[in-house]
Length: 63
Image (cartoon, rainbow, N blue to C red; front, side):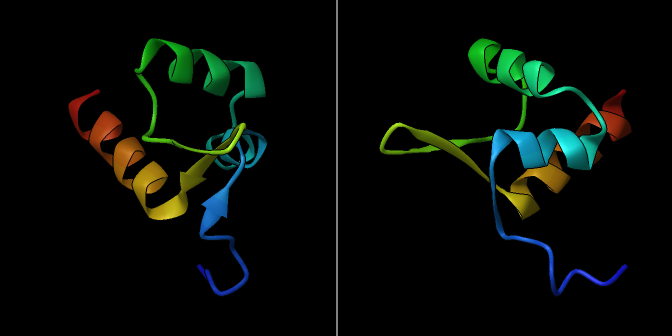
């Protein structure tokens, strides 16, 4: 997989697309603190791609 053009900093919509879930699911994960780590930049919520992938790998591992 060529990751050179993939963003390091992602929006919730980009996370949803990456994980093939709805943006609402990502929002619910954030609200219940059950999803990937996120950060607030002002009023905006952002995710770091490596953290999203690590969170997903851990989820799959412990399924």
